[in-house]
Structure formats: C-alpha cells, structure tokens
Length: 379
Image (cartoon, rainbow, N blue to C red):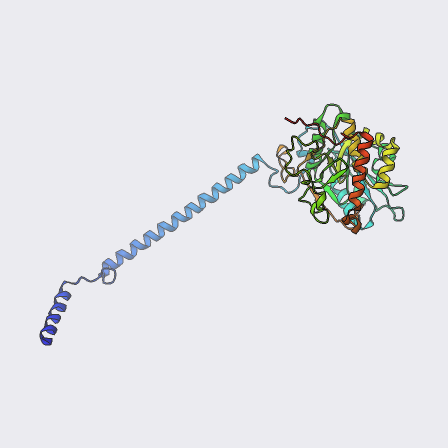
C-alpha cells in the first residue's frame, strides 16, 4: 500500500509540472522586459510632469489671487495704520485727550503714549498731560515730539487730586467740543478714538444731550446704593463675589430691570466739555468726590442728569475696523507699576467698594433716586 501511494503521488507531481505556466512578472523574455521597463518609465515621467504642471498652475493662481486681494484691500496686509485711512464720518470733529500722571516709574509709558497720539492729528487737537506729583518733576517730553502734529502740553498741578481731570487747567485749554480721559497705563488705537468720536457725534445732534462714551470692558452696574462688577472680572469674584452683577440681577430680564450697564469707569471716557464747568461749579459734587475717590462715578451721574438718564454708549474692541478698512479698535495695556488706582489689601477687603457704594448713594440723594435707572421700555 505504501509503495502504490508513493508511485501515485510521484505521477501527480510530474503531470502538474507539465501544466504549470511560469509567472510573467518573473520570467519575461528580454524583449518583453525592455517593453515593460520603458512603459513604467513613461508612466512615471508623465506623472511627474503632471504634478509639476499642477504645482506651477496652483502657484500662479495663488500669486494672482494675492495681487487681486492687495489691489482691493491694500492696507489689510499692513501692520501699521495711518489716520489717513479713516472714513471721515466725524465731519472734522476732534477731541482733546486728558492724561494724568503721578509715578515716574511710568515714564516709558508716557513716551509710548505721546509718540502714538502725536501722529493722530486728524482725531486729536492736543494732549493735556497733568502731573499730580508735587515732589518729582514732570517727565520730559521727548525732543523728537517738539514739532509733533499734535502738541503735548505738560501741566504741573498744585495739588494731588483726581478732580484735576476736570479742573481749571483743562477747561481753560480745551478747544474741542469733547474731552477724552485716558489712564496712563493704556494707549488707544486711532480706530478706537475714531469709534468713540463717531459714537458720541451720532448719539444726538445736540452735544449737551450726548451720553458718556466708554469701552465695553469698563461697563459697570450701579443703583440703589450698590456697585457691581461683571462676574467674569476678577473684582467680581475674587474677594468680592457679592459685588458681582449677576447678583441680585440673576434671572432678571434686561428689558424689565431698571438697571442695565449704566456706568463707565474713568479708565477711558469721552464726554462733552460743557460738563467740565458744571462739575467745577458744583462744590457738593467735587468735595464728595475728593474724599471718596469717585470722581468718575459722579461725572457719570452728572452727565446722566443733563442727558435725562441716557446710558453710556460702549465701544467694543475689535481687531479690524471694518468700516474704515483695516483700523483696529483696540486699547493696549502698558506698564501698570505704581499707578493712580493701585490695588491695596484694603481695596480687596472692600473699603474701596464701600466708598463707591457711598458715592452711588450720594448721587441718588443729590440727583434723584432714579438717576441710575435706564430709559428702557418694559415691553
């Protein structure tokens, strides 16, 4: 049996060898090998040419698209912006910047601020630099700005008071219909100043009836003796959670509450120059502000009283100013060392907020309990 099986298996293997066909991929004749090689080379060559042609066409299209884009928006690719790019929506209206300083540690800030504002002659008439420090000299104005388009006027103050922002040195020199108060640790872009002037001019045809103009990030809610930060801000939750404006307004519709964002802090605020003399001539207001460091709160109340309770207009910061083409609406933060509003432990524990509350109460007693209520329909 074993022998028969071996013979049968041997015969099957011989028959299979006769029927087997060698693989063409391994056993091609010489001429077929040559043809296959040429074919593969041709396929690879045409593929490479096609890829290169596509790359050249794609690159050409990108260059053409870039040229078209630059011809339509020539300033969009530039990081420097000139006030000549502004849309003339302010009818030639300029403003006066009032800048107050005290700490010599911020001298570098002043140089950056002066350099920026000195080029904005289409928007700024002059910069009034009030120096509150009685023990140190006014930081010098750089020689390069001696013939600047926008004059920088240093003014030594006779006393260290926040009320100097609304003082005689300002009212005697302002030639514009509005004034723009800006802190010495920020610098505004030309787009931001343009937007603030536009917001003020377009709010009412009568300058006396125009509301306060501020930056959205500076919005606050006050009323009924309360002073609220937004809950997202550190002042609203870090040590001062009860002063976060989601409380007690949580769940209340904006249309029905008498209090909306109705105050803008003095970090950046624009208003009519006529309000300066109203503030100066009212000793009750100026004296209370002097003792409570809340001149911005009382100026807000005064403007609301004159404009029949109009809320401030808030400018939202944007990286691109679409109406003007490419001007950013921004406020950049500079060195914050020292400063007029330096935070202390007492402030974090609530004494500063307590003073602000007392100021709100005073304004409600002085101008009426509805001074902070917005003119909003409940519908």
